[in-house]
Figure 1 (cartoon, rainbow, N blue to C red):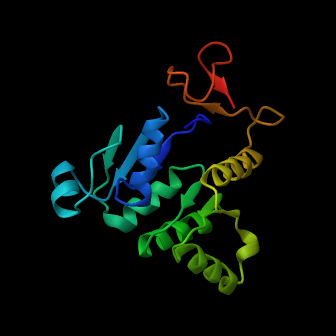
Figure 2: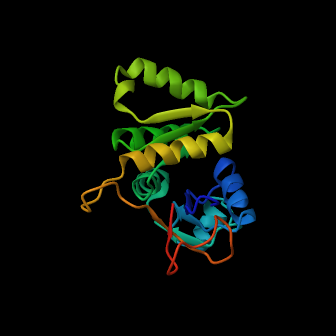
Length: 180
């Protein structure tokens, strides 16, 4: 958020909800992709929150379909503690060659993903960064994303980011667009 990004989550509890809370505290924009078809199903059937999300897109595709849209709609994917859905998001992003950040911590998921990469015989194919510090992980992932950006301008692409006009993320560099 301070870097000018937009948070896209699975509109769920736990790690994604905490990330959305942090995004809102920083004055950022948070979009949730729900597995449900509508708000009622989101809350009553899936038991998912509505809080801290500026926009919720009701996909109606269940968890696996939502995860596919979620990872493909993002420039990079960050995972932390989680369960089987986290593994699904990680593998979809890995197969799509998306930059991935894994937050290390007291949970088992980071070790599960390391073991999975080791046994895949394909870990060198991925753009995966690990870090214990959320701030450093985001910075490292942004560097990987930025390094992989291409455009047809004949040189390194400028990275245009959302301007929310509240001063979060730094001042504009001209006519309302901010270049990171």
